[in-house]
Image (cartoon, rainbow, N blue to C red; front, top):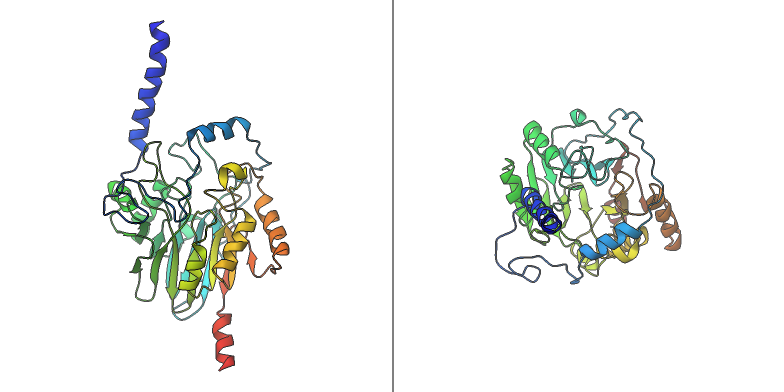
Length: 356
């Protein structure tokens, strides 16, 4: 009988020890309209589901089909590398990782080259596609944008490797730099929502709201911020939404900036009863595209790690349906293949000049 009582206690102690090892330090700073001194809150005050709902989904969820495509070769790097004064070029690595080249600088978003989105190498969501660029094929990286501290967005082994190889500036939401500093990455700057930072001589980065949550362990939930980023450059304005659900705040972002290119998440959205507070579905992604009045948008956060119940190909298929429903063309909002690059020309500027 004593042993039966001891087993749950041992398991609980083990959980606490493991969580202590993987949890990230929380933010320390003044309270605000979205920080109560301990935890951060979403703009629309919505919260993600708790442990009970997570267990319910784990028992009742039914994932669509996924295919392991890691056997496919990585394409040769074709990423355009413009010099100062040229347009914005983006290459889809996969998931939420993009290589952006603008005004002679190279920027990575949420870089993940690891095999698993997990604190462990032996368990957790594993990638079903290789990164579209080899790590060694990356150009010199000047800036890295981290949207929040989840494992499929802050891959610490990749971050350390980038820091050693390129020594870029890491821009993070409030509190996340404490974790990077603890891991030996010290060239960092934290941004709150609507904070602006001159990342380079020609690129200003603004942190903007997102609807999500944070945490690397069980007990550090929402102790660091999550955000998107707007990059204002001489060649145009790019919005990286990071990881987010749909919310009313997107109209505020659209009113604050003249956005040329957006990277908007379209995956990890089923079942809706569980995912809606934290992830957009493709139709909501189209609504974001419209709310921010983006000239064009590219889908992200899909097809790499099986994080939800939709199948591997469903996000792109559902995006096609959403475009049709909202009368958008494929050139308005599309997806890229791994390793595929896109270069954006400033159509609005050309039209303005013609109008004059």
